[in-house]
Amino acid sequence: MHHAPGLLRTGMVAKTPFEELVTPHLPAAFNLAYWIMRSREEAEDVVQDAYMRAFRAFSGFRGAAAKPWLLAIVRNVAYRALQNRKRTANVIFFSEDLKHRDKEVLSEAVSAEPSAESMLVAAEEKQRLLSALAALSVDYREVIVLRELEGLTYNEIAEAIEAPVGTVMSRLSRARAELRDRLARQVAKDEPNAM
Amino acid sequence: MQCREAHDVLSALLDDEVGVEQQQAARAHIAGCSLCGEVARDYRRIGDKLRTVARMPAPADLAGKVLARLATEAHSANDNRRFNWRGFAQQAATLLLVCGLSGLVGWHLAQSNFERRRLERDVVAAHVRSLLQDSTVQIASSESHTVKPWFNGRIEFAPTVKDLTAEGFPLIGGRLDFIDNRRTATLVYKRRRHLINVFMWPADGQNPKTPVPSLLQGYNTVTWTAGGITFWAVSDLNAKELGELQGLL
Image (cartoon, rainbow over all chains, first blue to last red; front, top):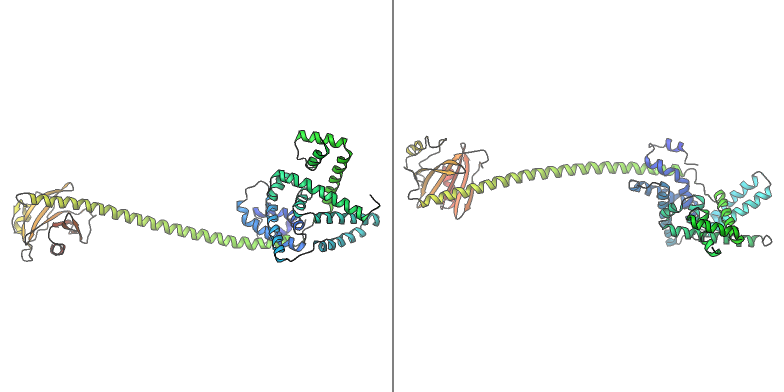
C-alpha cells in the first residue's frame, strides 16, 4: 500500500507506538471514509481529522484491536462531516466521483489482457456493483464495507459502529438482501433479455 | 427450518457468526432449498466481487499528509505536556513549601501560644495566691542590696532586683514561688495601691524577646525575656503603667 514503511522512516519523528498500531490501518480508514462520504476529497479530510483525534485519544486506548477502534473514530468524524454537508446544503453528487473512477476502470479494463469484450462486460458489472453499494443507505453501506471489504468480525463491527452485535447481524442481513435486490433490478434493466 | 428463518441467518452463516445448532439447521435447509441456496450463492458472489473491485485505494500522498500533521501535533502536544508537567511540579512544590512553612509556623505559634497561655494561668494563679497570704513577701525590703542576696542559695540564678521608688514603683520585697516545675524568684512592687508581682526564672529559649501584654481574669500581664531571664509581671494595675515597669526592669 501507499503508506509504505519507507514513508514512516523518512518522517521527522521516530516510529511511535501510535504510528505502529494505527498507520497500517490507513487503507481501511480511507476506504470506510470514502464509502461513508462517497467522495475522495472529503474522505481524505475525514481520515486526516480522524487520525488527529485518534492520536489525542490514544493514551486512553486500551483495547486489543486498534483497527475497530480507529474505524469507530473515522466513522464518527465522517458522520459529523455528513451532517455538516447536510447543514450547508453543499450537495456533492457521489455519482460524479464514481463516473470518474469508472472511466479509469474502463480504460484499465480495455487495455488489459484477455478479450476486450469480456473485460468490458466485467467493467459494466463492476460499475453496477459500485453503484448499487453507493445507493445503499449509509448504515447498510458501512456494515457491508466493514464486513466484506475489511473482513471485520461481528464483534469488531459492533465496536466500530458502536452498536450491539445483534444489530450488526440483522443490519448486515438486510443490507445484503437489499444489495442483491438492487443488483438484480439493475441487471434486469440493463439486460432485459438476460433474465 | 423454513425459508424465512433460514433467510434471517443466511448472512450470519456466511460470516461464520451463528451457533453450531442453528448452523446445522440452516445448512440442512439450504442444501434442500434451491431458492435459499441461490441467495446464499449470490451473497457469496457479491462479497467476492466487492472485495476485488470496491476497495477505494487511499491517495499515495495521504500517509505523508497524515504523518506530517501527526508530527506537528506530537510536537505541540509534547511541548504542552512538558510545560504542564513543569508548571504542575512548580506549583506543587510551591504549594508544598507554603503548606509546610505555614504548618510549621502555625504549629510553632500554636505551640508557643499554648505554652504562654499555660504559664500565664500559672503566674496569675500565683499572683492571686500571694494576695491571699498575710504577707506577699518573705523578705520585706525596699533595698535591692538586701533583697537580691536573700535569693542566694535559694535559687540557681541571680534575679534582677531594682529599687524603682524614684520611678513610682517602690520595691516591697521578694519571695520564692514554684511555677512550671521550678523555683522562681518573685519580686513585689507597688504602684499607688496596686501590687505587682514580677516572676523570674532562667529563660529556656522559647520565650518572646519583645514584651507580650495580655489580660487574664481581669489581671494585666506582660511577659518578656532579658539577660537570659524570663519575666512575668502580673497586676491589677492598668496595662500602660505595667508596661512602664516592664521598660524599667
